[in-house]
Amino acid sequence: MTRVTTVDELEWFVTLAETEHMTQAAQRLSLAQPTLSRALGRLERRVGAPLFDRVNRRLRLNPYGEIMLEHARRSLAELAAAEERIAALRDPGRGTIRIAFLHSIAAGLVPEVLRAHRADAPGVTFELTQAVGHEIVEHVRAGRVDIGLTAPRPDDDRIAWADLHREPLCLAVPAGHRLAGRERIALAEAGDEPFVTLREPIGFRRLTDELCARAGFAPRIAFEGTEIGTLEGFVAAGLGVAIVPEPRPHRAEPGVGHLRLTDGAAHRMIGLAWLRDRPRPPVVARFAEFVVARFRAEGPPDGPVTLDP
Image 1 (cartoon, rainbow, N blue to C red):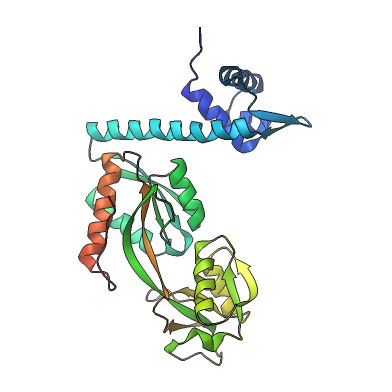
Image 2 (image 1 turned 180 degrees about the horizontal axis):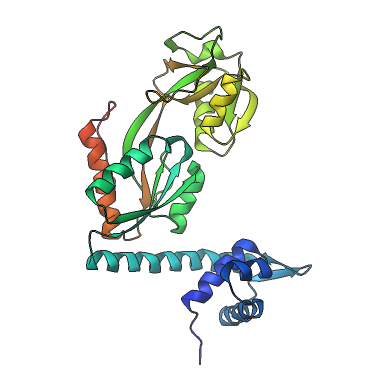
């Protein structure tokens, strides 16, 4: 008789694939190592292929295992979505929404949106993940989150998208810099300056490179970081200049001047991203509608909010 793989065994396999270490995975799962080892053996017999290569007493996920990991994550995500939809039907005012969001909007946009939604739906809870843009897209694809708040728009037809906020970009310079005190600047005027930037493949780094290319130069990189706040700190320390989002009132980094860029392309569009073909629990769909309606009511300065089907 063919044995059906259980949800627990799929979760165990995902943990084992992420750690590639039997002892560490067993500890994380609070299982006895032999129990985990036997479960892996049953799963490998069921699929008819080894899922890991055994190398020097360690595990390495092989191509068969990579396929299994992709489908295991998808299956677990679908089961979680089903549970959320059932819970929402039983009690539409409650449920959990899993959101991934950019580091650079963590201090302003995200708290404001969540605060407003909690006032409207106090029974809803959130699981929050802070990440960079390409990681957020991968979380959405894999079903680890329901919605991503990210920028720029993902280049993937499987990802649905709703424009929310067109955020102007500016040039951050140290206080006392030769350009400090200006309100606006053509980026070409800073072509000889050292730049502090985000690392590739972070989407904001691509925006920086594209804007510099439009201005006719390749930036001379003095430092690469992973968070915009870090860049502004190094600008304040005099390591260089940086292209950053225009700061919100009273949130500007001390010791940094922000000059609006004259290039009409100097902006990024922040929006909602979700997997187009995955049914959204009602609690998630209502949250997306709430956020889009909130931004439409506020009247974004650079055009209306749009919502993909």
